[in-house]
Structures are given as structure tokens and as C-alpha cells.
Image (tube, rainbow, N blue to C red; front, side, top):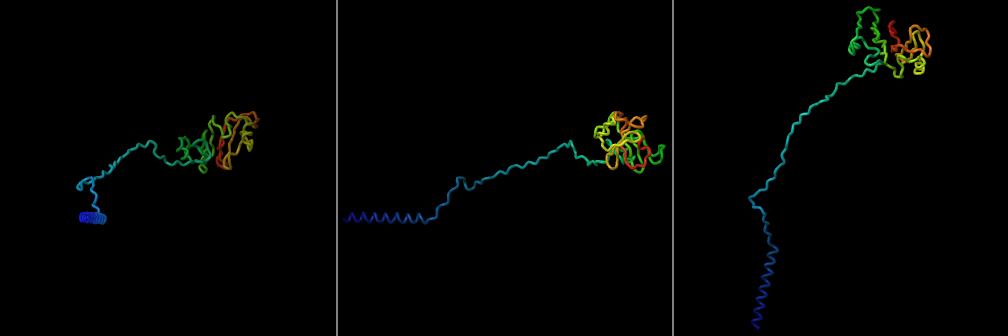
Length: 201
């Protein structure tokens, strides 16, 4: 009996001890976790290298200067209304205001120029065609079909281009009247209302 009581006392003491230690374990502050690396060792981050590169490019097509478009009527670079100076700028000419003339205009086989109005007549090359396909060798029937507003005049047929200029389709100088089968021998552009008597020469 005394032995049984002592064992019970021991058991009770053990249970109390286990309970106290459990409470202490629940209320105690947990120990900090240890890093796998030593505290004195630091981790370094490597920044990516910055590469500065200078590229030299060869410009093979530099920007072109703005070219003014001349919308005046004409053939190629020669335009009705051009001054003698403008004409010389697009191609040399033998014309000058010092050559003999009427003092108002000068002309050659290619152009007639008025001091007041500039180029008033352009003779097209023999192989040139108008926008409607008329040129040297075309018949006057073809001229009339291509230009419904064409009319006969002293040296051939004339057809308006716009309100400021006309074509002159010139035939053989031996003819006073041209049949449909007669052919154009010369094509000219001329400015209307000019002061050049030689504009159609």
C-alpha cells in the first residue's frame, strides 16, 4: 500500500513536470534560424556591363534639294514665257538682245522670244509628237480628228491647247489650202496675244 502511494506520487510529479515544460515551450521565443552561410559572408550582385558603340554610316543618297517644278506649257525644259536668261539657264542659245531684229523680239529655228512676254514660240523637233499623237508626217485629217477645235489658217491648221496657247500644224508653203491627205511638215507651240511678228516664222 505504501509502495503504491509512492508510485502514484512519482507519476504525479512527472505529469506536472511534463506539463510545466510544455507551457514553457509554448511561451518561449523561438530561436532565430541560422543562415546556411556564415554571417560575415556577403552576397554580391554583378551589374551588367554597359557597352557604348559608335556607328559611322556612309550616306550614299543625301537628301536632295527641293526642285521647283515649272508647270508652264512647253516642250522639255523650254517653256512658253521664259525670259532669255531662263532659256540660257536650261541650255545655251545663240540668241541675245544684241543681234539684229525689230527691237521687240529675237528668234531662230527653235524659239522666238519677246522682251515683254518671254518665249512666245517653240518649234518642236521633227520626231516629237503632241500629247494626242500628232507630229511631222501626220495628215491634216488626223489633225482634225485629234483636235476638234482646230481651224485652218494661212500656213496650215491651228488648234487651241488652253486659253493661253495653241499649236500650229504647218503644211507645205506651196499650198494655200490643205486637203485632208496633205501632211504636217512642222509643229509649233505659240503663246496667244504676243507682240512678236516673227512668232510663227
